[in-house]
Length: 283
Figure 1: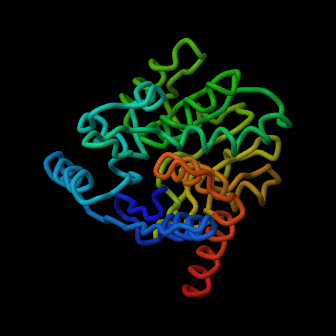
Figure 2: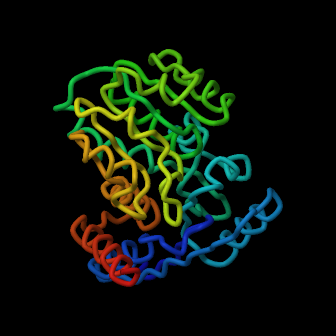
């Protein structure tokens, strides 16, 4: 049985990522060793990404995660895609299978498990999704798979929102013309943009549009309490931070990389410790 694994993360900015701690401490809890390497590259083009992926293939990695802004750009550079990643059109996990690179999407599975308890208790109604990029696509498919009544998608790039809505047309998804149109009368709201991720202190949704009768979730986890979630909580809305999405997505990726199921507690503790250390350092 293999007992050493080299994995990592491609993206920018990623210095804040809790993934190294989660993967390495989960491995330690299983009695194996894992090194999780941050591969932080700004403004990588197609050739840059191809070179990085070739390095992953040649240097002994069992796989890597991919985050903003490369989840869609890597798709066409891979040898194969799992069915979910192919349908979504975005990849956040790449597994090295011999000489082949195979793309998966654990954002979708991770978000589905994170949001399902909230959906089972919340009133049914339209859900506003802000952001139709890599993570937005995964979240849209997760929500559609959970049988939401209607999904209203808004993105600053209207063509991206329309394209994602078209992918989900048979599941009652529509593109919205504005944030206000997406949120109006919605039972829930999900931020799938990087707005609110440090160092940004902006919000993707004006506070005036938030209501106590809705629930609000954010895919951002640095900080856990984004300006959006802070405002939503102040207005009495139910909120979901990016914590469970991050832990669940990492857990599913770990299993794809190693073939082993990571202890949830070890990953959760590592995530919480990483967040606590970051906030104490910035205080």
